Image 1 (spheres, helix red, strand yellow):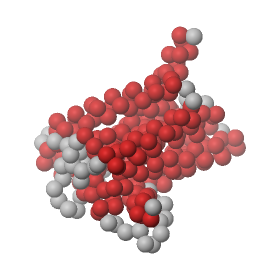
Image 2: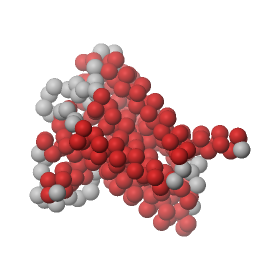
Image 3: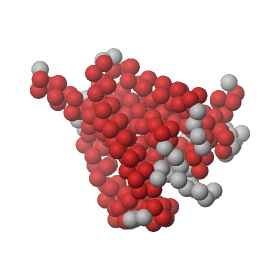
Length: 257
């Protein structure tokens, strides 16, 4: 149990800016095993976003509450995944070889592709959340944040890490992941769906899963695998697609009824 607690705090330290006990280390072995808790981190981030939204919507209105919840998510993770998405936009938008793509992706500077990509995905996230009813917002945020992180884990499980240098941001994630890590990740990623108490919520998973499949193929085609930035981009894209898929299902259900 103590070891699992240490692994959890390692995941919390790596994936968020939430303060952790001083005894938590950067042990590569623990960091690799921490992948099992990645979707659970989505519970924490999604929960913080949901609490801020639910606590401010009545006093400030939905538009401001949504923006505040998005800011809370960015601050909680330190824009960890957003940064990965921007780097992927720059790298795959401006690079035409594996070496060039990896070089651009590692560059800390943000280019036009990254800026435009971030603006568009944040706008898409905001407008999508604006269509979610107040009563369902907390469930949607928990489910989207956890499942999108599970999608990133699926890429880790089915692909390989491509960087060889030891100073890469997500080097520990390059190691193989056993079934012992996969099973908890799947459970943590799917558990929030039970809050909806409707089988139809599974339709919201279609777009994120399709995106995960095509993103994995795209990354493999150009660089032969994934990097930490690729995982961040996957999380961002599948989170937004979860919202869109859910809204699309509601619209279709309304039309059919």
